[in-house]
Length: 391
Image (cartoon, rainbow, N blue to C red):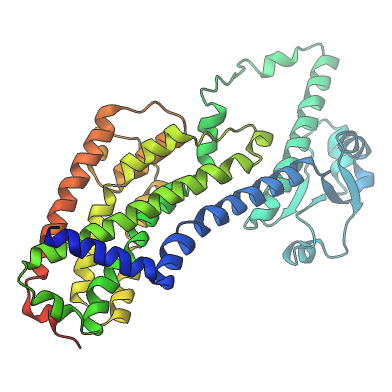
């Protein structure tokens, strides 16, 4: 066997024997992530369905001032409740999501045909209350539109006079493309899996062995340090690829159990999608392995390396944050930018868009090129004499 191959299998066997490495690589980051992700999505869907199907409970102040409005709201299934003595305080204490106040001048304004004023006491900073507020506003706007049409008809005027243009949506989305909104965090989780999957092995194979004083005996063997580093790098990449594959399989298993069809969505995460995602993302393992090995070569101890690596694996979050804060229209050059191209390819695959060969080829080629450069830098670090000196 060649020298790098011996080192490769040495690192693989040692990490497979280490229970902490197995748990860290294949449980916490790989399996626990998809399970927690599916649990959060399932909980989100359950909350959305419960709030949309549950009758709206609406406390009203001055309900006697607008009996027709109250009758209309009740006909729409709204449960009218007595208002609390301190409505503003009730909103601040989150005892209610929205409170409707009908002022005493409302009847006079209504009879005079003027615009009658209603007040909604809300706190729009509370995300939990947003759906109740929106439902209340829709009901009131629908009642206002109905009243406007009746007033015009009484005067012999067609309601179409005040609505000369009707806008009809021609929605180009599909049930699968709409599921991309729910799976917005999927790109970050998959890319993070590649970086985190080989992190423990990279730290242990360099900083850990130096701390245990077993690296120096390995380096004095009549073998080039480049081959030793390559074997360790290959083992790190193998663990990263295995973590990604296991994570994709886990996502493929848990996504069919999500009740997305109840909200008009479909998640197609089958074998074809898993294969495309694996081919697109796995080259990042080479960049991750090179960066992790380089960082571990600089660290003086296992714990110090863990600190540096923890900061390093936050790198995949940058494109996700950019796309979340400022969604960009995909441009051709983006498919030649590592991390950004992977973000786009994952989103397109999940949305069910057809795979474009040149986009995948550009992303894979550039990622492998940069990964080779990072691996070369890591190999140069292995030629430093300080590498074998323990702290």
